[in-house]
Length: 577
Image (tube, rainbow, N blue to C red):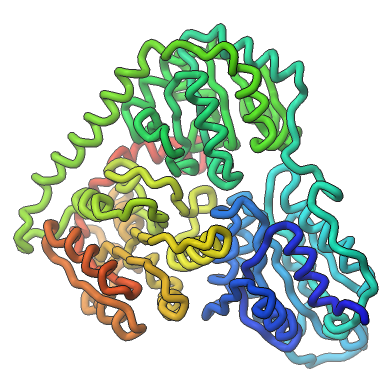
């Protein structure tokens, strides 16, 4: 008896370690959904296909593997468009699968066909690969090519569809190949280049490690920890690489948003960059704080895509390969000759801790704590992050509130999920659901999650509260509410001055997110005093339900007092503002 196409697709995905599926089933996919559930997969149907795409993207980040999103033909896959674009800019290897009408329907000269549009041209510029399984026996080659393209070079999304008459056709096929049999896996760098990099590291006086988003999504934190300990140097996070590696929390500093990071960067004479595009948020590694010592600073760059080497700045030693292969090579090369601590490391660690404590203390003066003065966003962030659960997953969302989080967060999570490169707000609730479910499917352990968001972003996909409730997630959503688009209000004020009409940025103050949450079956809390934020979060976790904590924050502070906002604006300095 042959293997139906829908079952073969699942077998090929299982060979990659994939066991989660996000999407809304339709006639093209009901067979696949039912079979996936029978095979023990985590199958999640959200309320909007864009949310399904964001869930899949978060799943790929938390597992280091490709993830799968289903969008039915026509409007279903069209709804996935924001998530497809987001996955492209965020470098997330998501496989978007869609159905299509039977080709006999597509090729007829007809008008008025129901739920039909040619889909592939819509997405070709937003994916790394697009294809259609026109014949059943193409299934293996197209699915493998999709995964190969999604994971190779700079990771990213792919789009694959099939016409409806293909899904139940049967195949006579062998067992699926393991990944290493049909694509590069954990590719190492040229060994001579690795030796050259090790020599530069040994010779440096003030080396730093610059870690980006890719360090988290490749799940190679343990190897990077070994490398950092051998280099005995500060670790600088990009704004996209904000997940702290266990054991390196005290020596890790956020670029620009930590004073210790600025000092470490300016004094460095060698930078080893891992998992980052060296883009605008780090000033291309070329200007602003990098300008000091530029004449003597050496650069080692680990990058899987050879076409990216030397584009944003000159590189002294390029190491072309997968972080999962190259970082262990560097560890082996340095193992016999670990470095003495970098001269300023102890000072940076002391200063970094003192700055964080000072920032928390400073916020005590920004809210009277009795409900008479709205809670300053900085205090909101301090109190909420102090209540972050140990071993939890932190999910960020929003505009101004995220900028406050960069500076004031008092926790150092090992897993932070947020949309940095594309800046797509509203992803938080789907990200939380996808990351938490995929993590449990991969490890067998359900970790708690905290979504720290703003009201405007939270409303994008608020229906997914029901999905989180249905999946019984230990998730608490802490929502800073200023009844406005905080960042945009700030733009009006900076552009036209105080007292100008802020068209399109405010809405009713009667919205109660705690009550909305209760309507979905969540535990709700309403907070107007800063000292009540932590206890409210604790009660939400203790309830055993998904929690929604509505925190009233100061709209004036939220729009006018964003910390280091001038630094943030330098990311856009090249003629775009």
